[in-house]
Amino acid sequence: MAVPRGAGYDAVTMPPEPRHPPSTFSDLAKLPDDVRAEIVHGAIIEKASPSWAHGLAQAALVSSLAPFMGRGGGSGPGGWWILTEVDVEYAPHELFRHDAAGWRRARVSQPPGRPVRLRPDWACEILSPSNERRDLVDKFRVLQQVGVPHYWLLHP
Image (cartoon, rainbow, N blue to C red; front, side, top):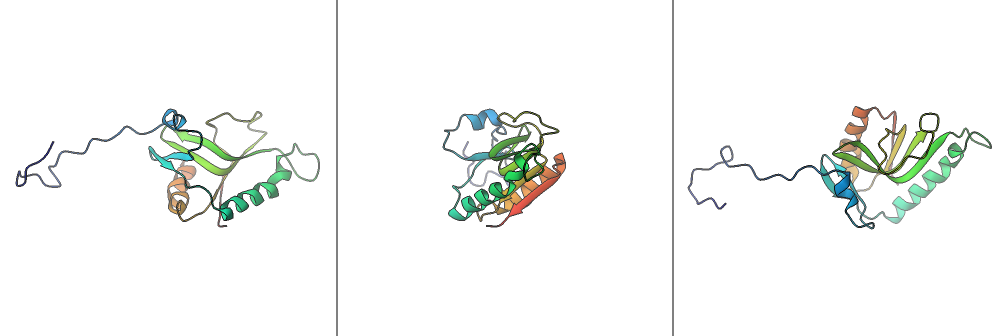
């Protein structure tokens, strides 16, 4: 509806803009497979393609954590599911695609499905200029609210 000039509307009395309902996993699942996205505060946010530095940091991280993924035999303590680029749903309108996340096998005996609806025991984000504020503020607050015990931030 067009509002004629001088019609008496101001910021207080102006009718609100129509809002879209918050997005959920079903909305995210409709996107093409090559779209990297997550839901932050009900909005679908497309994640930028990772840089070389980001990819190398993610590979080094997972490689260094490999001993923890065993079942206790060999050189490390084992007992963890460690996944990369996994969709974790914390609430219907909060679904993050973590760079890496982990669950203790003592608590989660089978690999989780998609989206994972179980709080991870550990989550990690690799910072980049396009997502730094979301990782440092928005995701941190949600993870704190739901009780994720460990949240790592890596700067490549």
